[in-house]
Length: 312
Image (tube, rainbow, N blue to C red):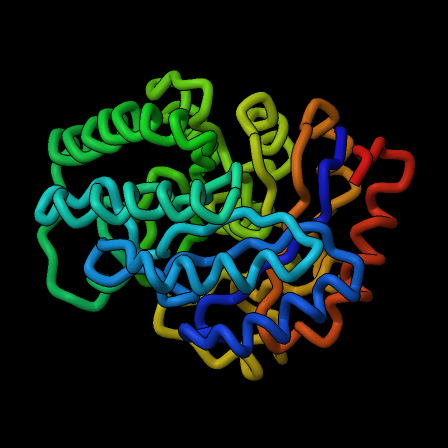
């Protein structure tokens, strides 16, 4: 493993378009010793109805340039290239996200993998989906990524498709709940600048929910991993409507996004398996753990003891 930077997420819900709040967070993260911050396109109010708001992006660029930081980008969470009902908006949103990454000088754009059933539909009446319909949606995502990879390459951007977490009330809703299925998609797309953003917290939850071997799944995905999301949890899956973090944390349930070492994910073993990984280690913490960012960075550096670190 060659570490090219230590990153942290700027949480979209926490920011809610407030650039003054982002400025405070960037100062805090730079002081704490982070080298990268992951900027959410939607969290900074840079896109509306799939259209990039360029004056807003110019304002953001002026702010980002004030800090000795580098940046990665997270596309809007609801982006779904399997949505055949409004393909135009989905594609426009990804094109805008690629352009956003180019304008702020980010080389990595994280995208959520396509969902056969989007999270907002979990509570609605539904008919069983045929295998043929799922295959059509899967192929639509493959073709969209092949097309978008050319735009991303011209922008100097790598697309990192993120594996999904499971839900008690919705799974299976996304092929990428299982990392090996995401590998199949990446192989089908077959583009050098389309790889996996391996979210370790999501993968661990899925391993406990479906009963597969977590470390074996990491090993299978390793050759295709181009970006990492690191956070901790206890492997206890929740329903999509469970949102109250104080209550969930009290019982150790859900996608908690805890600092490394607070949960039970064997992160040191994971890093041993990712020996060929070259890239940024991005922690994704919930805002309630923001005060522990410096401690979390120290814990992550400890996990990387004896791992080569690029000149950052």
